[in-house]
Image (cartoon, rainbow, N blue to C red; front, side, top):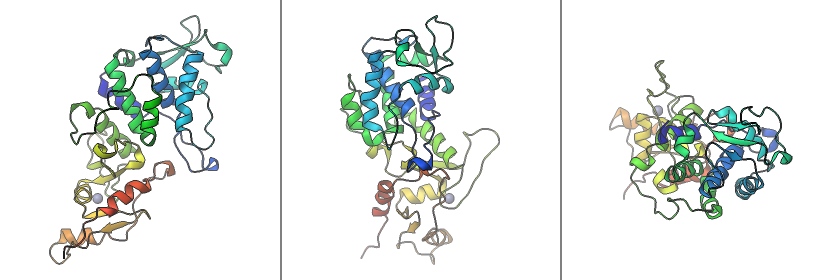
Length: 306
Ligand SMILES: [Zn+2]
């Protein structure tokens, strides 16, 4: 497993989404928070990637992060991700005999008897301090971009990214998260352009797609890879949005720049006819585009020059 593959796995954790009955749906924070806590435990040298004790220290590291990112009635229950992260293929919870996978509720009284370990090559990636910083940054950008500063301030050893000014470059340090963001957006939008509805899905694998994952507020500005900061767009509409010729508005409708002149070309006519049309959005309300991102785009829509 490479670092990039590890980041892709972290971007698509099966975290679960809260039901409508519990308020506005959101992704459950438990698994990503547990991973942040485990990385800190590794930084402290109080665990190794093949033996992460179910301990009071881990529970405390979990709680201090959980309280920063919890929404509505999320329950502060580190035992759940400690057990269920096993379903994501990179982790297993093991009984004290060192062999038997935990297949039961994990209790406070199991401290000292139960431990977790990374597997499938993730343990090799996570053993490296710099890699852990990358993984930590990826988790924060994907799941908790709004709480980045608070999470880094509770982190015992600050991440390498924390003191850096974000750069425009999308070079090697970010090369793992970019395909990971694309994959999650394309899946959430079911390979469909949010402007024209174009859907081209080839049967030879998900990597070949005409659909792009566009950030609403660019990553270099926001460091936000949460799906609510993204839109699936075909190449044409991605190009047009990035040049501020079209913009999504907070009422989930498209706006076209008045500088477009349909008499000049069919292309301009097609773009201006998008005005007022509804965005084609994911069914899952937890992933609807965020108002701040929509406003960011709308504010930049090209105005006519006088
Ligand atoms: Zn399109």
